[in-house]
Image (cartoon, rainbow, N blue to C red; front, side, top):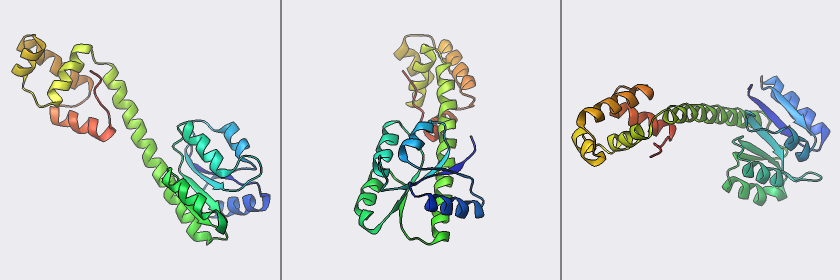
Length: 204
């Protein structure tokens, strides 16, 4: 899905101003007049970042943020705050928000933060895609191949693996070759690096 910024603010003038500002720097965006309106269209597949007013009629920005966290959203969130809202914004940062910007703010600084948030989201999406790919490969392994993989990753030699699993060394070699092929790596070192890079863990 195309990366873009999602602007949620109950002030139409601010929404329009932010939308124009982002467009002037080449950032595609969509605007929403309330937290509820954004929540209605949110899905885990949304990519980009959220520019969120902290105080709104109805559901507040912090309440929307909490709802999104509960739903597993990975969208980086930048809060737009008034001076009195800074403590709330700082609390949200501790809960995983990307940043907060006090109104009125410097236009260029705000867009720079949006661009950083988009960059972070792109990296997160790439990491998630890699993890999904690795998990799909792991799911293709047989139970015995997963057992062999766990012992290979523990640094054990084929003879030791054969003794522990009470199978022949030749059988270990066959399973080892098969699991490396399915995981699309050539060595145990490459396998360990691939799993570490994707945070994948062998299911044993």
